[in-house]
Length: 192
Image (tube, rainbow, N blue to C red; front, side, top):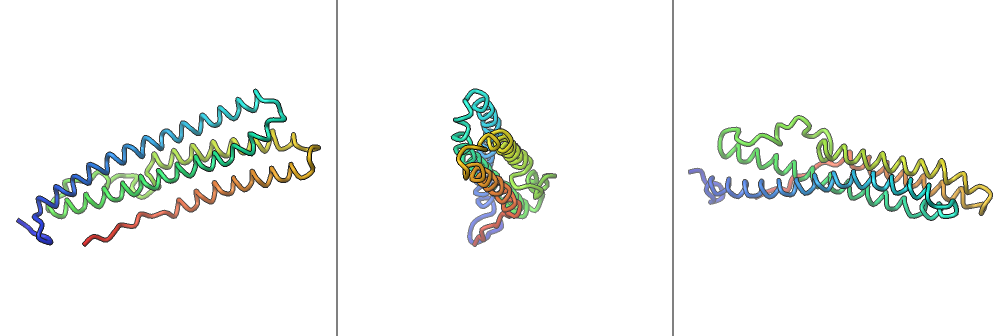
């Protein structure tokens, strides 16, 4: 029996496997949340286009002011779930290495040998969900710029440039958030 810090190997493996199981529960939650975010993005697009067709043009400005912050929130929460999913994946990978080292054999290998490991924050599901929400957000912002922004000419003189700046800032925010996410790396917590 190998002892490390006074804890038998079998006890250490049992503790690690309990964490492993709990992390997979968290991974399932994050995967589900990411898939839901992608569906919410499509629902937002459908709702926006329906509102654009159903509402009179004088109400379009309200939609254009209210929608970008909602898109930013949807994208930020998607980014957060992808980052949290990445953290869980990397910790599962660490546990696989620890258990394999204790066992002296490669018993657990799924995350540590996964083909998409390290290629995208949150894995393939994280990447696809992020791009679904980002693409939908850009389509909605572009639709506002194409259909609503020109309709404001001739109204209040500063309104059209203000809306253009407003939409542009939200587009830049989405791009900046994605760029920051791409640099994200899991930092393991040192253990005793």
